[in-house]
Structures are given as structure tokens and as C-alpha cells.
Image (cartoon, rainbow, N blue to C red; front, top):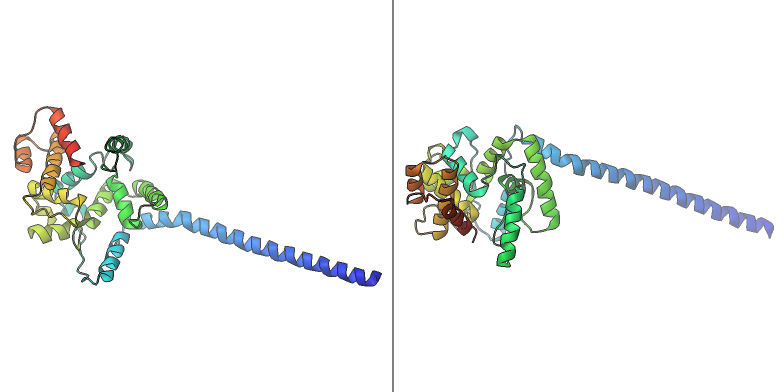
Length: 280
């Protein structure tokens, strides 16, 4: 009886020892896998952004998603995009895009806190989401690396990439990539493709009026055309561009009148009112 009990005891002990050994190995493997996953999770975005310091992406995450939607709808994939360096893009277009999309682009660190607080207060007053506060850097991060689903995870990813873009690329490179990969119409991506499609000329030769109307369509590129002279929405955005450029002394009185279609208001209140009307 004692011998049988001893055998059972040692067998149980061996099973327990084996179990703990397996558990220890499994825990070690899982821990190692977690460390490796964490390392690549942290370093992959840095590598993605650093790559952009001297390489241009073939296409963005949004462009891939856009192509997939075309296939799903059985529409022809005629997506048109052509990269040009920043010095081959008219200063008029650069200024117009900054004026209407992110007026504080060269002064904020990737996030415009004042604009965010203003948008929150404005949306609270309207009891709905009317005004956004995404900077050019945030929009670029979303287009390059994120899907366009509304979720906390996507927003957190966008924020992380925004900080990395600002750290490693600098403002001019961010603007260059944004202008070259933003959507500017059905199947039209990048300012060069947009300029050729709408005005039959390279983006370097865009006039201030053409640049302003082109920049004005960025809010709804699949629904707006800069050639639509009757669009009230585009006209409002053009006026905002004119006001912001005039305020920063990048347009004189005659330049303002050429872009907006009327002489500039002399009091800042009128400019502020026009800027508010853009968001509604």
C-alpha cells in the first residue's frame, strides 16, 4: 500500500513539475512575443516616417482604400496622381491652401489647440459637429497611414503619426507631401494632377485666383469643382482665403479684389464674420 501510494505521489509530483515547466516556457515565449510585438509597434511608425524624409510614397493608405472602393463599385480605376517638388508648386497655391486649411501651419507643433477649443465651443453652440480643427499635418497623417473610419484607435494613431511627422520631416516637407497626395476630385490626387485636370497647366503656373478656387475645393473634393462659378460654398471659402492672406499682408487691395471679386473690408470684424461663415 505504501509503495503504491509513493508511486502515485511521485507521478503527481512529476505531472505538476511538467505543468509548471510548460507554463514557464509558454510564459517566456508569450513574454518574448509581447516584447517583440511592442518593439515593432513602437519602432514601425518611426521607420515609416523617417522613410519619408527622402522617399515619396507610391500611394497613401487612403488612395489604397479609394482604389478598393472603386473595385467594389465596379468603377474604372483611373486614379491620377503625379508628384512634383515644392519649388515646382506655385507659391500662390501653397499660400491659398494654408490660408483655408490651416492658417497657423507654420507656427503650431502639429496640433492647433486654439482651433480645437474654438471648434468644440462652436459645435456645442450648434449642438452638432459643424467645425473641425484638423491641421495639415493631421490630415497628412490620416491620409498616409490611417483608414478613414471614425474610432478612438484611428484618432490615437493619427495623433502619434502627427507628432512623428513634425519631428522628422519639418514643415516644408509636410506641406510638399500634403499638396502632392491630397484628393482634389474624383480620381484626382495631388495638386499637379488637379492643375492639369482643371486648368490644363502645371501647378507652378497657377494664378492666385485659380489657386484659391482649387484650394477651396479641398473641403469636399469629390463634390466640388473649382470651375463651378455658381458655387456659393466655394465663393465663401475663396473669401476666407482672401481675408487670411490680406491679414498676413500676402495680398494687397488689388490682389484681394481679384481673388474675392470685391474690395477688402477695412474692419477685422467683417473678416471674422466671413471666416465663421466658411464653417457652416
